[in-house]
Image (cartoon, rainbow, N blue to C red; front, side):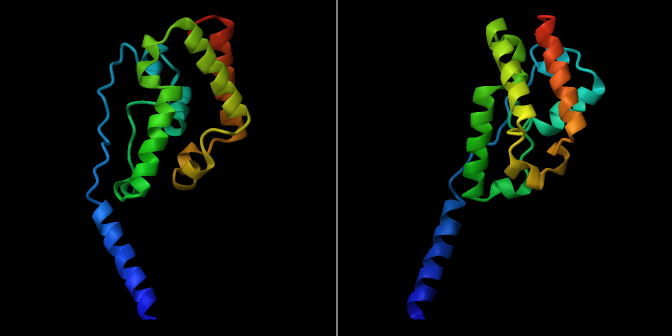
Length: 152
């Protein structure tokens, strides 16, 4: 029993110590001149869907929940945000070339249709990101129209 108490004590000490390892959660300022929803003059309904389901991981407008301030959870969340921004960052949409924009729209359509995005783990704590089939179809139609008309 004493061994279990020692292990629990050191685990607790370790958890306290890692709270002092900083994770930068600063968002870069967003310029409306390159931000997707501004540049594309996205209709309000689509804008709301994209912002609620995509922007936390795929923009510089991440809103970190309270639980994102506790290590090691904070490390995992920051890693997911960084990875999401690497694949697609709506905040810098206007800086991408046309081939990259088309590719990102194609990939977005695919991940929305297969329900690979938003991530299931994200939707557990963010109910607004749990898109209905109709909302998914609306986003897909919007992105497909952009591709069809070369207006990306």
